[in-house]
Amino acid sequence: MNYSLDSRRPSAVHRLYLHYNNVVEYFNVRGSSVLATALDITKAFDTVKHSLLFRSLIQAGVPTWIVLLIVNWYSKLSVAVRWNGAISRYFAVKSGVRQGSILTPSLFTVFINVLIVRLRESGDGCIINNQ
Image (tube, rainbow, N blue to C red; front, side):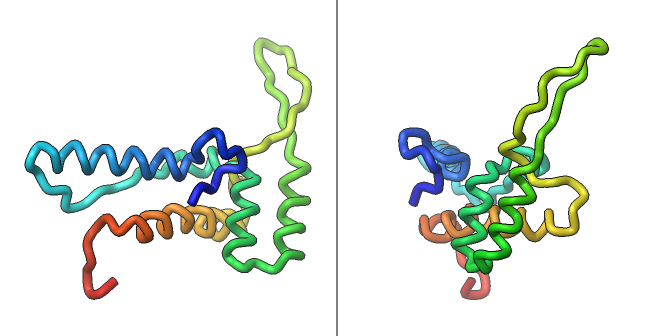
């Protein structure tokens, strides 16, 4: 399952999964067991590709009209850079979720669920309380 829009380049989720597998394999080859892994996603809010966010919303069953509303809202994002008193031209923002929005935690939760589903489908990990 590749969530990238460009099939020639693996998605961030796919790269993260590959890195996870490499770390587990590294320790297993050396005779050690991996009992737990952690993922630091503190900067992930800034790196979410809008196109993948929208796709995740559709896959999660969010009504089309709501997804289109969010697409419209995000399509109007633009920024300029100020440096040494000069201001650049405005350019479109294509990644990151809006900071401070009441929707942001929910949108990010839907997006990150793709990673969780991917890890579950891999069969890696352990089962605790039949989950």
